[in-house]
Length: 210
Image 1 (cartoon, rainbow, N blue to C red):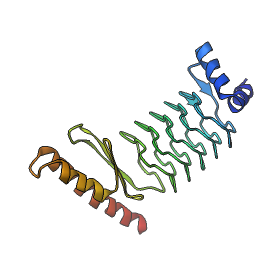
Image 2: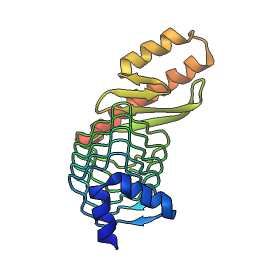
Image 3: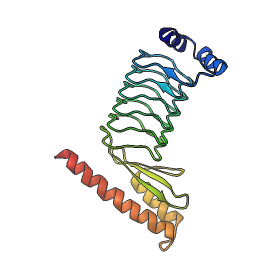
Image 4: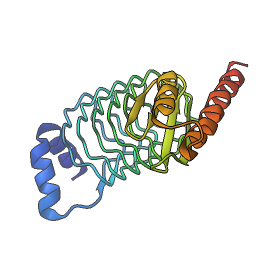
């Protein structure tokens, strides 16, 4: 049965999605599945067990991986543009050279994941678990600004994601100064956050270099 599901997924994603919807399949066991180089555009894989799966070079544009388990999965060079990975478990997953532009990773678990050379342009990492990831130095500050949202600082690639803003650290500082007056409460919050992110990132980078 498992092999039939994998073959259906690899050969006809639309048919696979209809099958899940028609029979109300809420969970899928695809552990250790070989989906190398598969075209999984728009695939509905929410709640799927993809632990240890081979998704190298897979095309997962717009795929729904909400709450999927991808622990120890291999996603080398996987294309995850605009994919939904909210609350996904990616502990120890390999995302080397993966494309995650505009991907949603709210509350995703990425402990010990490898993100070497991964593209995180405009990816949403709000409330994601980022402890001990390798390949990227990423820090976050929660509950600041007018939206009390999370600010994500990707020190490795010099990228800040703060609300609708996405850009470099220096451009973020300029945006803050342009938006708020010096004595505004939110200006002070952002100022403290910027100081923390700046010095903490450099401290952590120096420790990694030792």
